[in-house]
Every structure is written in structure tokens, then in C-alpha cells.
Length: 238
Image (cartoon, rainbow, N blue to C red; front, top):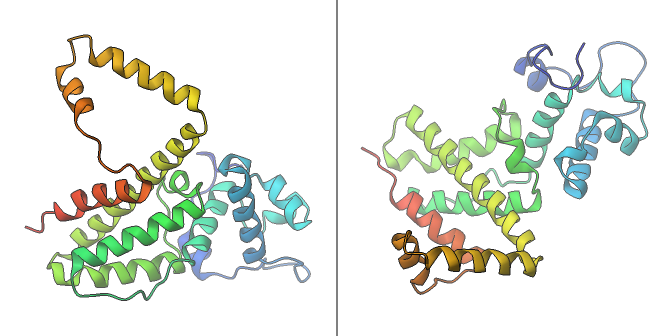
């Protein structure tokens, strides 16, 4: 059986994953829990990135044999589902709603951003379809409740949630990359010189005008707020 989440691996069964037992069915009482194994994988991803999460490394984190982990998560893809839902449990499932759905969506987005900044691997983990677990469903239920005053049908509300989450994930991935760039002043200076040359070549007048525009506040919080306002204030509920 493939253990790496490849295309030849058996399809994940959401009923078994989220509603079945989290303990192996056979054999002696397990020394570990799925919760402990998932927490170890999350700690590894937080410290070293998603690429560092392998069944072997997770097993070493909990002091288990590699083969024993497959009773809890048969492949890395399943483990990623568990990890995403595990950290989603950190999001408040009952945050206060104002009745102003646009304002409440902005609160949702700010919560998501802070959450993803705590777990920088999360945007990449969300790029493929994830079957929502109990923590994700609890948060989703709150967002759908926030959207009730918008008058959207159910499918549209789910689309708005997906759009918002994708925006936040993409923004955080960019924000993280930009933060890394600021730690390399030489590279930042080289990029600035390159753009200055391009803007002066006469072939990119729109870009030259854009670069000459007085800059707006570039703090991460201010930038996120501007982008978020453009997204949510422009949502069409027709």
C-alpha cells in the first residue's frame, strides 16, 4: 500500500477519518493517540516547514516505530488532513457577530490571517482539497451564520467562504515571502534597481506611473486591511 499520498493510494474515506474511531481496531492497547501524533506533526511543521513532515520524523518525535503510525494515518495526505483540522481548533468557533456581514467577514479574515501566520505551512496545506473535520466545520458554521444577513443562497455562501480563505492564504504566503526578503537587503536593493531601470525605459509607462505614485503605508497590517477592504466591499450579492 502506498504510504506517501500518491495517486495509487486508496481514496480517503471521510466517514472513517472523522466519524470513526481514532484508535487502531486490533491488537493491544495503543501507546499513542491520533491527537498526540497529529500534534507532533504540527510542531514539526511549525519548526521546520511542511516539507519536513515525514512519517519517519513524526514517529521519531513521539518515540514510535514508523510502521505503528500507519494505523493512525495511512499516508502523509491523511496526516495533513488531521493537521489542518487540528490547528483549525485554535480558531474561535463562537466569535462575536455584529449583524453586519461585511464587518463580520473582515473579522473572520483577520482571525484567519493571525492563525496562518502562527502556522506558516498552513497556506500550502490548503492548496489541495481538504475534507473538513469537526474543528473546520465548527468554524465554517460560524462564518455561514455571519453571512445570513447577506441574503445569499447556501452555495453562494460556501463560495464566499472559499474565496475569503483562498485570499487570506495567498496573502499570508506572499506576506511571509516578503518578510523573508526584508532579511536580505542586498536582494531587495537589487530588485529596486531593476524596477527603476524598467520604469525608465519608456516601454512601460503604466508601470512607471504606478511606481511614481506616493506610497501607501506598507506595514503588514495596513496592507492586509487595504486588500481585504477591496475584496469584501466589492462582493456582489446579486
